[in-house]
Length: 124
Image (cartoon, rainbow, N blue to C red; front, side):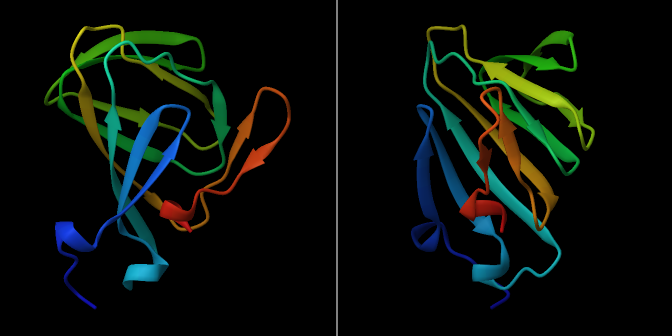
């Protein structure tokens, strides 16, 4: 199906963040996945290592990104490029919610600090 309406997007909640899935194999995308992340105010991030490159565009608000030890506060319109194999954490330290748009390739997995692996349904 070439069109996904916002009413058809599926929301997954993990670690206090809503992941609204738009493009993935379940919606007809074979190679690229994309979703909107909704990060409530004051939400601390969870460090994880990704196996695929991710491009994260801040749509609203302000978020603090930690990528392999580099730290930056990004505002709406800014983009973070997360290389495959990088450790990523993003925090919403502000008093307002923030949203991001993320794109990656099918097959994304995240390894948490405790060694557990997450295979997010919004990217597989």
